[in-house]
Amino acid sequence: MSSEMNWAVSQWNADQLRAIWSQLQLQVNPFVQVLCLDGNLYRMLDTGAKNFIAQNFINHVKESVLYCIDGTGHDRVFLGAPRHFVAGGGMLLQPGGSEPFWVVRSETKLRTPAVCSPPVSAKTTKIPRPPNAYILYRKERHNTVKDANPGITNNEIQILGRAWNLETRDVRQRYKDMADRVKQALLEKHPDYQYKPRKPSEKKRRTRKGLQTQAPINLTKCVYPMSSPESDIPVAASPLHNDQI
Image 1 (tube, rainbow, N blue to C red):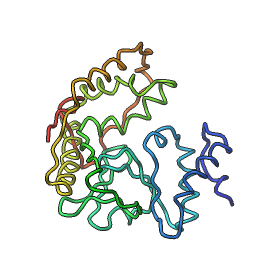
Image 2 (cartoon, one colour):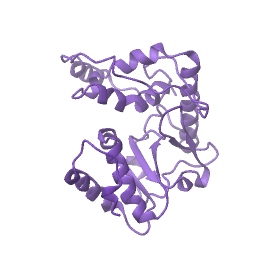
Image 3 (cartoon, helix red, strand yellow):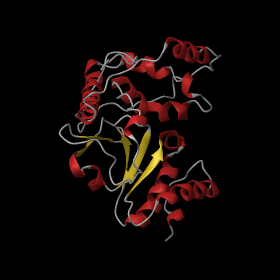
Image 4 (cartoon, rainbow, N blue to C red):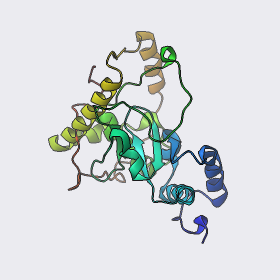
C-alpha cells in the first residue's frame, strides 16, 4: 500500500503534500538518517501532513520515526528514529501533551544529530540566544492558537502571554527547569557566550511593526495541553525574555 493511502485527512491536498515532500526529499540520501524542517513550515502543517511526511521518510530509513523540536535555540524540527536523538549525549525532554525537545547533556558538545552541514567559519557564526521558559511554552502552543484563529499573524498571538501568566507555579517551574538545561548545554558549547541586547534603534523598529491593527483573538477555541504523569520538565516568571546570561 502506498504511503499516500496511510496518512490522516489533511487540509492540504495531495498535490500540495507531494510538493512539500519533494522539497524535503532533497535532503534524503544514503548518509542522512534525520530530516530537518524549518520551524515556520512545520507549524503550518496539520496532523495529516505531518503523518504523510513521516510515512515517506519511514520508507527511506526503514524504522519508526518521531518529530523532535530543536532545543538548542534554532527554529527547526527534526524527524528521525529516536535512537539518533539519544546518541552521543543527546537527550529528549517532553512537557506534558507536547512534542519532545532535543538537547545535549551538559558534559557533551552541542551538535545536530545525524545531519551533515558544511563547516562554517567561527568568526561569522552567530550564537542564538537560548530560549527562556516562556519561549518554550509558546513554541508548544503556537499551532493550537493558529488553528483556533485562522489567518492570525505571529505578532498577534498575544493570547499565549496571557495564558502563561495564568499558569500554576508548578507548570511554570517545569519550563524554567527545561530552559535552564538548554542554557547550560549552550554554555558548555560556548563558554565565552554573552548575551548582547539589540540596539535601541532596532527595538523601536520592531515596536512600530507591532503597533499595527490586530484582529480579535478567539480565546474560547484554544485548549492548551496540561502536565501529564510522564512530564518531568519546567518553568519561568514572565513572557518577557528576562533570563540574562
